[in-house]
Length: 325
Ligand code: PMV
Image 1 (tube, helix red, strand yellow):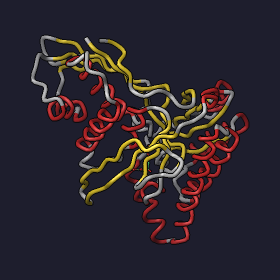
Image 2: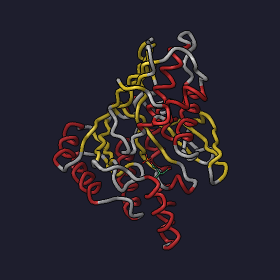
Image 3: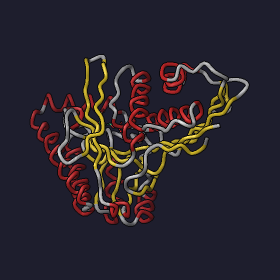
Image 4: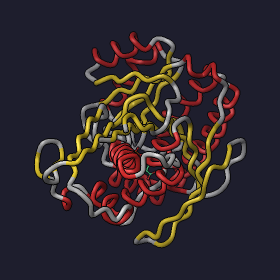
């Protein structure tokens, strides 16, 4: 038997602007996915026979990464994440499964988070018709604060480069980490799920159309890039007030790009009186918002009263871990 836990994530800064080559900052959260595997008389997933075609992330890792053709396995998955909510649940599943299988097959060999991030990214790409950014998989594997960009980002620590051949051509990314003072771990993030899925592809297409028909909206993407830089400076200095102000400013620009909606606005407004900053996170159009606060129970209550589902996490959770061998 072997088991591993991998965290989910949320985007703090740079969503949508990252599609235009600017950096995005994501952070690992306390909630995630735990996978346990053990030998079994037949292949099983969550108590039912395992059908590889219905679980492309898992089958890619079994067949293409490990080339595993040993004894059948029983796979158990426990997830604390809302799916299709921009929380990186499929990346966390890929990381947790890859780490658990690694520990199962080779318990004496230490886990290398960068290798795991690359493996999980290839699983996401296989499952998503060759299109996947490394943001979710890298944040879940490495933990902490991760900056993904087309090039190196000043004020961050370079971790690895990666690329993918997509149907639109080859894409290259630089994956970087932000080193933060320990005191930042006293703050909390509260995510509020609207209860509706976040249609990433549709929202990316909507922004592309808006920017081509109203070229002034390009200014919002450039403003988000500047806000991301200010957010990175605030994070590195452990300046929570400045971090919250940057989150509020990012939300205004995302509203201007028309990716917020009524439910997201309600949850952001409800959180603000008890928060240092609040914004929608990820693609928008549904999914989640996130608030930075030192009073997570008040913010969670406010989100619940406004009709959302709250999840509170310390700011900057750890990456993937082996939880049993
Ligand atoms: O909602 P998420 O976490 O999948 O984030 C989407 C982020 C976008 O910038 C809108 C799209 C992208 O591919 O980066």
